[in-house]
Image (cartoon, rainbow, N blue to C red; front, top):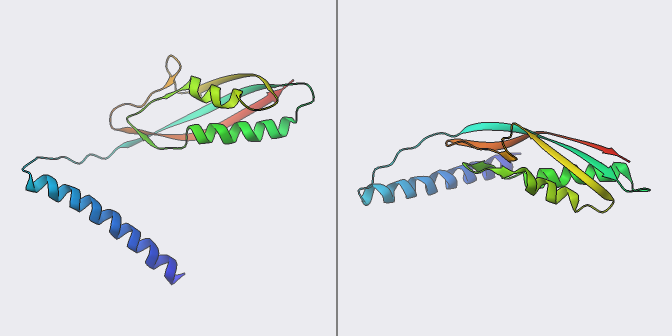
Length: 130
């Protein structure tokens, strides 16, 4: 337990030192800087997957959830996620005949991320049907 605490503390100090080093370089160069905290923007993904005859629906649902989480996993500061990229990942699953994806909130097929925000996947729901 103590080793875990020491290790975590060393990582925190290393991250802090790297940030201070970068800011110090900016100060030496005479460059002004501002630090702003980003706000979390949560979104949810819903998938309807039509299974091919004889496909394992439970496996399909689990794999669809895993692929959605993979596509949406990185915290993306100021970047958007096209719903089409989520659909492409899910439609490539063996045994899936058709996939329909929606995200909330989304606008014109994109999970948008405004300036000063980062996207975090809040919820995934997958319905598999024949």
